[in-house]
Length: 282
Image (cartoon, rainbow, N blue to C red; front, side):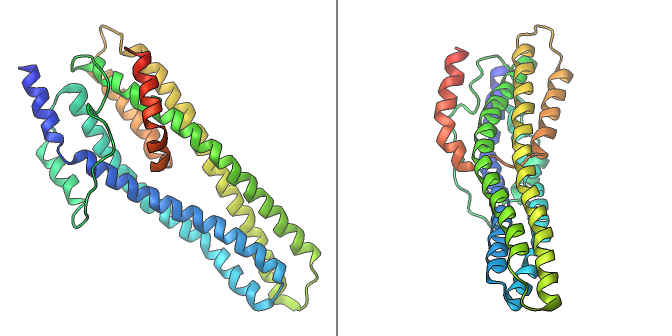
């Protein structure tokens, strides 16, 4: 009977992984655009300071001023998509871990999110999770451990790449400040005001890049803590369902408050991490 319930739950997934992948992909695109705006505003500000022309400074200064608004708007939009994608992830996790069929009302709501969009097949190798435990609380925390393992290592990779962007951003900021002071002001209030605005926004944009780097570092640490905790809990014979589900929800809060893992990075390291994980837990 349990095996039959599990088969129903797995069949019930159908296009859920594809929808989850689509939502995460759209959220990632918005995050990339926010980074493009940030870096683009910094570079254009540096160029404007070097040119030292009143009109160029005024135009670029205005662009720099509105960039933070655009960045916040894009990331709020991405946050909504991430929450929707994570709902898909949790339903898949519960279906796999507990062998429960996904409620039809949840499926109807989720499928409405992709209306009018062509879905691509989600890039994963069946089975969805590598756990060999029977359905129940222990299997649930076991697959959370697997998910957290991947998240921890991929977040570490992203943070490593962001160090380069942080160094570049800091260099651009220092250059803007240097040339704002050292290049003579050829005419009045427009240039002075524009340079002041550009310098102030340059601080904000550089801080935004460093904050993004810190978020990935925090995600790495929190995912690693979740992995270690779940590695202990999955061998606990008296593990309650409520404790396992609380672990799922705690991990959910970590993920929705973090930026997404770049898809290309996941594809690049997926097989390596998958082999490393499965070889360690045979």
